[in-house]
View 1: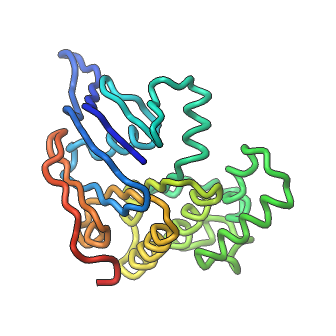
View 2: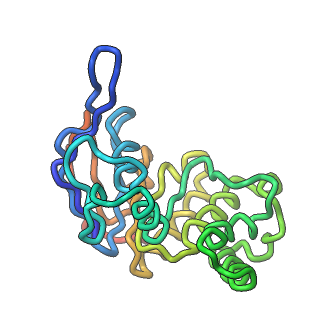
Length: 230
């Protein structure tokens, strides 16, 4: 489903350039649950931006379902991203003045889905993450865990094939982390591909595959012998 071929990513700095990713080769199959770990500055967030088609590499190829992203126009890349990939971030990125139901509806609004259908689908998505009774509340009225679950519902509303989560449990307590991870496991069980960036090894241990970055390189790539719930 996802292939990275000889990926290098550099950024200009005053003394020349800073190379953040150095010849990354990676394949991720449909239905995998992958945790990407590594120390600060190892290239995790840069890798996530490339996987999510939010940025392009300096050299190399990013292929999503066999399509080389670099060959797409900006509009076609945006369309691929909106149809195929859902994003969950540590900061939630919910609009504070809207209810969580309205927040979850937003991707469907931009996709041109009629009001009644998007309202029905958004409510169903919130019910799946246990927030049906809270659908009329605005983000400031919810706990951090509830906001993150709303953000996950929004990420999944268009039924993307890939879910990318960048430190999704970073600000949450251990009980809430467990609830969030259970949701991610259910997404994987539904046949979706889940990729999580995390610095928390206990969270990474819930994945079926761990990729560790260090200094812009893949230091290790291991498929675990146990599954979730172990």
